[in-house]
Length: 92
Image (cartoon, rainbow, N blue to C red; front, side):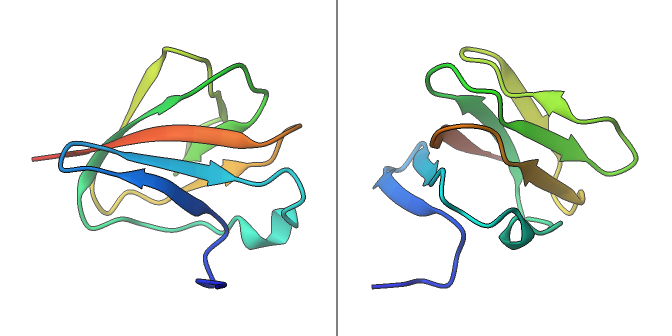
């Protein structure tokens, strides 16, 4: 079933979401967007995908490195090679 989202949620718990972006995604689908809550994201596995926050240069998504995204901050994912898996923690 297609959710219309550019990702698939693989696991959802009370404390985090594991989300995957497929390597075959068209980069045009990776839109600038804002979320309603603070988030901390972390890449699972090695990747060359990137995250770009508003008015900043893209950041490499590195395994084990956490990146905080404030609520309502514009951001986007920039496609790299292979699938991207992220662990997303919703912050208070």
